Length: 385
Image (cartoon, rainbow, N blue to C red):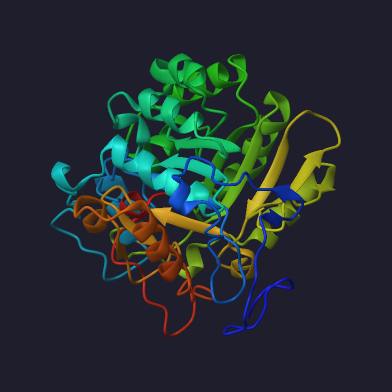
């Protein structure tokens, strides 16, 4: 099913540089050979504007919904899933460093993507701040003409050490993953006693003028769902943009169960019972979160519900993994090898043409909860958030 502005697959399409009132800068960051090549458009008419770039598959947290390698995580799942492994820990196998894209390679890909209509770049991981000298890459990307939004998603543990340098380098926005305000629950969910560091990073981000500062909270039934109202009130009093995210099947243990999903509808009902909320319109048609402002307070809450209320028809995202694979959907079962082309001497024009061909095969939607659903072969840490 396509969205309202899509056209049927196979139709002949002619695209201009104007999309949703935005004028695309012609040839931004490209060689003359690539100027005017056109947009990244899939077979359903969706125009891709958002590129998620994973800098590393490594992470200093072991979040229960991504890398559940801790004993606490195994115990939680074991009580709900009879087949949960009960002996050998589930250890993530990291990609060899030689296969991780260099900053120069990442910059090249971003320049090519900008020339094809990408406008938003988000740096992810793993934990992106584990890459040494990440501020150098931020500086390079921020100078590319045509990048209108340069953001990062981090677990926040190392953010305070890099915050000033990232801000000066040109990072515009930052999102923190923080699923609990209770120290013990935080430790159970992340495998690390790091709540204080994350809270310090949040405060510093606001002090340095990052706007907005977002907090992402994955909600899991019987683990942290009792904190929904507490987290929302934290956002209200601190002037943060909080995003509640439904629990998705992206953990390396393959232990996800639909019964552990707290749906967006349930989250909203609880928030409305506690707070006076005012609906906010979508920032753009491809936004993933439905948003509400507090009638009293400076912050806002949003709900991202990919399991119970999929938004695939409006998806405008493309993903680049740390080891140079292109993924057209978070739940893709296939990856497309860009690294080989980068390292085999392909020209920018050849890569641009290849990317357009890859995007044509972007999935119509995911199949979470359906009998034929197949989970991605790699966890969220490897795919990129």
